[in-house]
Amino acid sequence: MSTDQHPGGVGRLFGVLAREVSKFGVIGLLAFVIDTGLYNLLVYGPSLTAGSDAAGVLGGHPLTAKVAATGVATAFAWLGNRYWTFRHARRRDVTREAVLFVVFNIIGLLIALACLWVSHYLLGFRSQLADNISGNGIGLVLGTLFRFWAYRTFVFTQELGDELEPSPSTAP
Image (cartoon, rainbow, N blue to C red; front, side, top):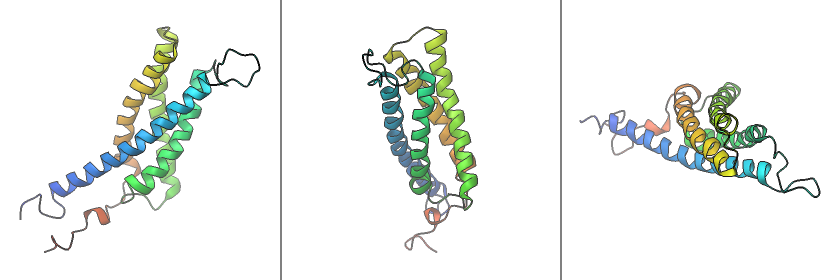
C-alpha cells in the first residue's frame, strides 16, 4: 500500500492540513471583517460628541481602537476555530486552550500594533489608508501567519480523532 493510500499516510495528513488551512482562512476572513470594520467604526465612524468633525469615538486613539476591535475578532475566531477548524484537535481542558489562544492572539495583536505604531507614529503616515495598510494589512498578515503556526503547534494539539480514522473503503 502506498503512503498516500495508508490511513495515516502523507496524503491523508496533507488532506487534513488542507482542510484546516481552508477553514482557518474562512474564520480568519470573517474575523478580519469584524476587526477592520470595528476598527474603522471606532476611529473614523460617527462621533458621540455633537458638532464634531465625524471622528469616531476613539478617533484620537488608534492603538486603543485596534486593541478593542481585535478583542472582539479574537472571541469570534476562538469559537470558530475551536468548533469548526480544529474541532478534531481541541483540548478537553477548555480553560487552558482558551488561555493559550488568547496569549497567541495577544502576540499576533502586538505584531499588528507594531506595524501600525511604526507607520502612524514613527513614519508619520496618519491617513485612514495608511493606518489600514499597516495595521489591517501588513500587521494582520504577519500576525495571521504566526497564529496559524501557534494554534497548530500549541493550542489545538489533542490526538487527531475522526479526521484520521480510516474510512470503510480504506480499512485493511
